[in-house]
Image (cartoon, rainbow over all chains, first blue to last red):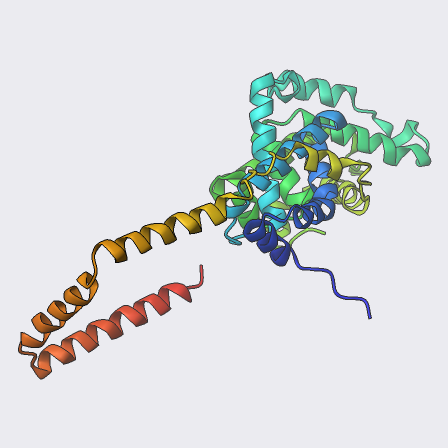
Length: 195
Length: 123
């Protein structure tokens, strides 16, 4: 009879108490996809940078595993570390992409493929995805992080607040503002109102 | 995909198309599993090296403590017995009343229950 896989909690206990690196490797294997995907979204599709930050995330997680108190799910705790790594890196690089100016938004909006009529159906999904990625990249760090945590990582506002280290109200504000900006940037994709 | 409270708070009817677009992108994003492709191995290689404690350290510590205890016992014969006897004599000489015993028991109870409540607290 095949034995059930160890829970995250059991693996964490083994890693902390016995310095068991095999247990930690299993945790990395389980969560690497989610953490890397989250960072790819935060870095606006920069896969190499996202993987570097994901590696840094897991190394930090290993160093601080003893301080994990299970006040949140392990994946949520990892998202928190990953988001902090991304924020630190973004501030260090002073990414031009993260500029939160009206010009950026206007550019994002202006270059959107206004594809409602011109683009064939099979290409619409891909173009919309590209536009969305570009519009997300034009949001401020806080807005993008809030949208990614709430929509892409499917966290509640409370969980997102834990991940982002900010009050729930601030998360809601970031989500609302982010959505308003996305709406502006993706205006070409809005359904036409026939009146 | 989207959590109920978030949807109700963030969405107006005007935002339906945007919510649908983001939700579709998020679904696609969530359903695509990223292959490991050596990522776990790279992480494990990047972890700090384990602290290497020499094998002789533990037996050496045990031997040193044993030698110290043996030396103390040899140098000061009967001291431990004398100390114990004097401590008992001092305690026995103290008059103990029932209220004092009750106070001590109550204090022990309070400490025990507080410790249990702290250990079983839910965050």
